[in-house]
Every structure is written in structure tokens, then in C-alpha cells.
Image (tube, rainbow, N blue to C red):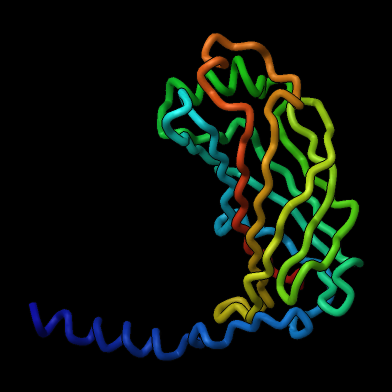
Length: 204
């Protein structure tokens, strides 16, 4: 067994050594190429949390997202972002609840997506900004501000495309989006906290 594993371990160590270290990540927005970027759905996660019965916080996520951005590190206010969430991709780890939410709450047959389109960007720090835009959810459009952090950028070690990472949070009131009355509605809180972790790659 040792004779079989030894060459595999050597090859793995060599491969790891060939990949640039995490120190190659730059948190300086000026180093990131200006231009169009596409959201990487395999490295993007949208989660939301809501109070349940006033005693716990229940969280879930959406598994399917897409989007695009124009990034300008020297003039962030000229950047923009558009994102789409497949509401049928909701995942609570409870199949019965997922079906209930799709059918009787999000009504995904009528409203299959939620969309966000930025309208303004205000820089709040060296790596932070408020991104304001229009969120359309369940057929209702409301202004929303995302508290956003630029996590950094780097060349992807395999594709050679420049990649960017961001984190964003906001709080919504689900009553603002005209969701149907459901029997269990009295058991959940008014506020929904939304958290977004996104990775984007430069278009080539």
C-alpha cells in the first residue's frame, strides 16, 4: 500500500506547490482589471435567515444563481451589477417545506426568478460600499441597499481569468413583497436577513 500511495502523494504535493498561494490575493481594487465579469454559480451562495417562533433563527439558501457585473476599481461608482436567483432552487434541507415554499409562498410557477439590478454605488471604505438597486421578488419591485465588502481579486491559477470575490448583506421585510397568507406565517418574524457570497470571473 505504501508503494502505491507514495507516488500519488508526491504528485499531489507537486501540484499544490505549483498553485499560487493565497498571498497572491489583492485587496486593492485598483489592481483588478476594469471590465465585464460573470458570476460563477458554483462559487456563489445566497442564504436567508428568519426568526422562528421567536426563539430560534431558521436559515435556508438558493442553489441556482446567475449574474454579471461591470467592475471599475478606480471609479467604483461607475460599476454595476445584475443578478438573478432561481426561486425554485430554494433549499431548506426539508423536502416537504421546500415544496410548500415553492408552491404556496414564492409561487415559483408564476414568479420563477428574483432579480437585482444596481442603480447606485456609494463607497464607504477602502474595501466597502453600499450598492443600492431594485430587487424584484414575487412580482414586486423595491429599492434595496446591499452592504458590500470587496474580498479581493487574483488571477485564477487554472483559467488565467481574473477573479473577484464579494460579500454582501441586507435586511428585508417579507410583507413588502405581497407574499400569500399562509397558516404558518404567524410563527415567523417580520425581518429576513439576506447574505450573499459571490465569486466573479472576468470575461475573456
